[in-house]
Image 1 (cartoon, rainbow, N blue to C red):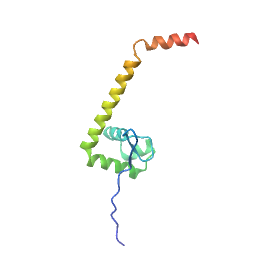
Image 2 (image 1 turned 120 degrees about the horizontal axis):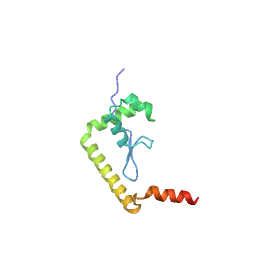
Image 3 (image 1 turned 60 degrees about the vertical axis):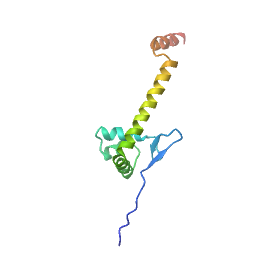
Image 4 (image 1 turned 90 degrees about the vertical axis):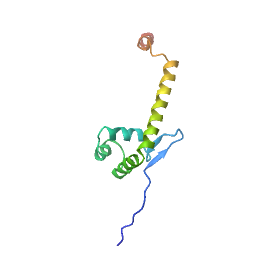
Length: 108
C-alpha cells in the first residue's frame, strides 16, 4: 500500500465583506490567531470552538506559512474596526450616555 500525499487547502472562507472565517462557522481568522498568540493549544481551541482538530492545525499551519500576509490582513481589520468605532462615536456621542439611558428609564 502506498501512502498518498494530497495537498489540502486551509478551511478558510472569505465572506462578501472580505472577512476570513474558518469553515462554515462564524469564527474569524482574527479570533483563531489571537487565541494561538495567547498560548492556547489546538486541543484547547477545539474544546472552546466548533472546529475539527485537523482544521485548527491546518489554519495554524496556514498562519505560520503566510504570517506576514496574515499579519497585514489583521492590521487592516484592526484599522477598519477603529474607523467604524470612530464613526459611531461621532454619530452617537458616548458622553452623557449613562444620563440619557437613566432619563429614558425614568420615563417608562
